[in-house]
Length: 119
Image (cartoon, rainbow, N blue to C red; front, side, top):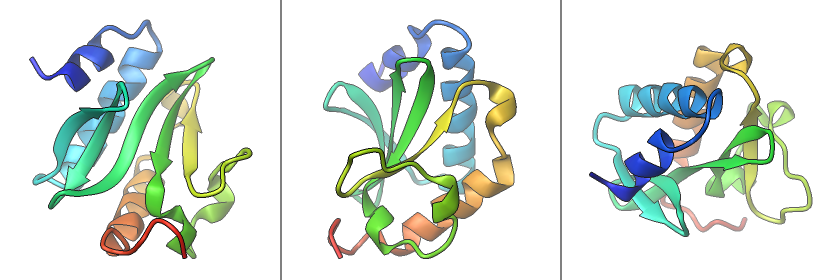
């Protein structure tokens, strides 16, 4: 089994369910996405370029987007919290996830995947 999948399955609830739901949304949006285990967390790549990472941290699941410096839409829903490059979405419960918003963000991020992380 892929270490990234093990990471997801070993998380306590509700984080495991949140991670599995996000995994489903990512793989539905990008059927070609590859789930890798980098920096001890699950990371999604499309055509060898990073799209996002998943991290259970404190009392939430963090979905980080490396190319967020290029985003012009949906930034009001993201958290940067003392990070210079990465912005993320945070979820404490399954009900916090707005599927369509998350998919829209993924599609926006994907448009910038070939750019540098920094603007």
